[in-house]
Length: 505
Image (cartoon, rainbow, N blue to C red; front, side, top):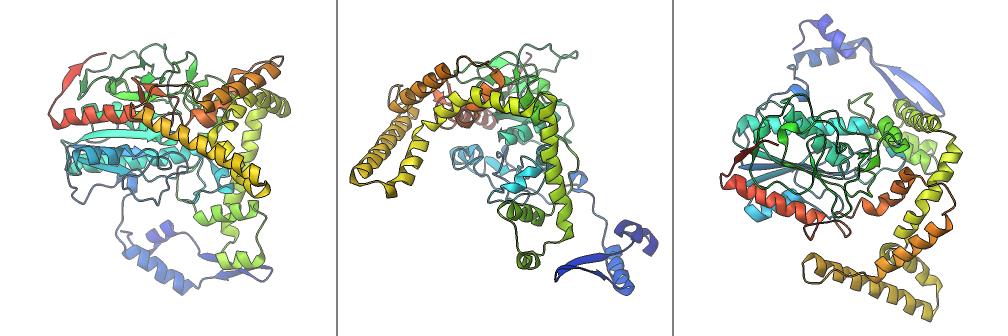
């Protein structure tokens, strides 16, 4: 609580000024001193509340033997999202809910971390249905880590015997991974490494390289509650599984290896990474990492006015009228957000120019990425979309062709479902054969141009970033996400059965 008017005035500022749009200009309205005094007195009467990161748990929680904390990918969360277990992208994967269905909600608690899930300030130009909060990628991840840490510390305060499972996909993997690294380093109050049963990060932008030297201080023995997953132990202590695509040397996550490590969580951190997915497998020191490193900066993690994002999106879609400005309450308060978004674009351009002429880089990127982009373009997904768009403009025979494309796509979709259920053998489908042919033709056509591994990886990103949930990434004969689910089930069963063993790696 503030002590006296002067002390409180120092917290609330020296004046209150409202800017409102009126006519073709702005009119400044100064709030009267008596009104200010009443407002300050009201603030002074309120009890002081600690910042969220330092607030203590005050409400008892229902305790579960296992508590799942998971983070969704870019665009699939916001700070205002509910914390019930939800899909980590589209409707493809919700491991927390799956564990609850398997073992019951009394045995397994689960929550999604509400966080901005923003790619950067430029995300305001193409907001998702959840909106845009105008944070840099780095700020978004940090806010997610801090929200996750508050959840862990609150649950641990009331339920000290609970074991935690941390899960994340893409940007959510950066959140879950950084949070696990804090636990490994002893930075999460009440949560020791032994309290973590499992960590699964899929397409982790903070993945470390393989083959780097171990830390100087040997890690403590790890307490395991289930089997050690198959894969390659990385420098950061995670076990990387390439799902049949290999784990390539000289590769790390898009933002570079995270500063923290999992050394006190060894044997229970599974990193699923398709070697064609630049989110988790980018050539170390490449231009992609330079650009992602700039995106990963942290400048300001405070609350952002969501109205600013709406204004920027409206401007990018053709501008807004004076009436829209008045109706939506847009004003000078939105100007800093607009400037920050433009500054970020200029910042990305500056990073690119450090790597050479931008036009030359763009040309190299197009030539090297084209075969992989065409590979994706030849997929059933895009053929069906193209056929659907063309259907109103073709005759009867054209309609038959369109229906044929849809029928083939549906048949292949059914085949993959049967394959994932182990009811059909692995075959080369017409879609795969068509994609390989298109890629080979374009690789031959561009064979005389200099090759650039970095941009080849970038061209594969569109499909490689989704193989964990569709097809193309398999662990022990199972689709990547299905294998992760089965391993998490084994670990959860071990916790519930009281199994634990110490292992030193």
